[in-house]
Amino acid sequence: MGANSLAKILGPNILCSRADRSDLALLNAVTDVMGNMITHYPEVYEEGLGELQEEPLLPSGVR
Amino acid sequence: MVGSKPIDELSVYFSSGTEKTMWAELLRQTCDKKSLSSDLGCSELPLLTPTTPKRMPDIVETRTLTVAPHEHIGLNRTCLRLIDSIVAALQNPVLNLATFGTSLDMVLAFDFVVTGQPVLIPRLVQNTVIHILTYGTCTFSSFLTACGFDSHMAATRVRTSVGAALATEGIFRVAGVRDRMVELVEQINSTRTIAFSRDENPANVTGLLKQFLRDLPEPLISRTEKSAFLSMAGTIHHSLVLFVRCCTVRLFCIAHRHYYADMTWEQQRECLREICGSLSQINFDLLREILRVCYFITINESVWHWLLGRACDQWYRCLEY
Image (cartoon, rainbow over all chains, first blue to last red):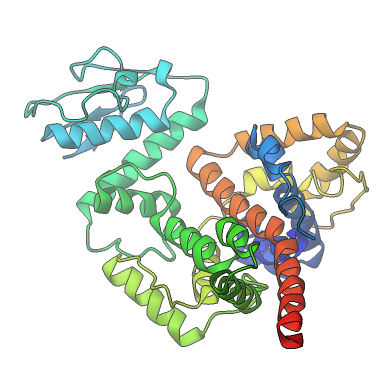
């Protein structure tokens, strides 16, 4: 799942009270903020993880 | 054990050395070390590090922990909230068993009582995260194993990984089986036993995590901090101007959106850190854990697609032979 999809699903549960969950404008803002928090998680929440992230996921020579 | 909380002083009465050690460890983790002094028999609480023997001589008489007033009110407030909740949990062990629909303080307090150790992330969240990362996504180790295609074992592993990946794509989007989730919630609420079998559908487990967050009496990011978070909407990296129509945050956002939009990414990042720092420690820890899982799932997204394509390629070659 991408950051935006996760933000759409989890964001309202984290940022909104029950009364706020029907406000679409608010939900858009929540999704935007949560998406950014997920995307930039290592930079914002885990200093030093950035170096680990730069390692290639695929081993060399593997298509 | 009972506790009382005067304005500037916290008194806790210990009945045993083990209990005292648990409290001291909890306080050490939740309070600023410099702000905490004690007459527990050691000069400072930082001495209670893993290098120091955990077990202390049993004491029966009353001891007092003194929590000095400190600038970082949030940390001390967190500590005091936790201690209040633990005392309440110990005094009402039957009434407050439920994990779902209970405040985060109380959940942590009961986890503390059940495990005997300070817990800063609810056990339910810990176990769901472990289950998701173990069985819900293609883990990095299995991915590496899957990269060697020369043996039958590796090929089997590829099929397994691909199967898991296909089965759990959209792991948070797919809803769990309702009856099973109700059963799990009742089981956790009544027995506080949190254990998921290997065969448990990952969607059920993620459903529990969503329900736990949804049922919190106060959202993880409370009303007071929400406006600060939402003011960052549309500004990070792409500097869009977002007009938030929610009345509660509208004025704040109008005042701050241009401010954030004019910042560099480094400045925005520092602001976001600062805003996160305004959360209480237990809320911050839980938020970070959830974001960590989400980030892990996000970076595995491309791996899933790669594995699927690669496996199809390999199976096609097998068919050729």
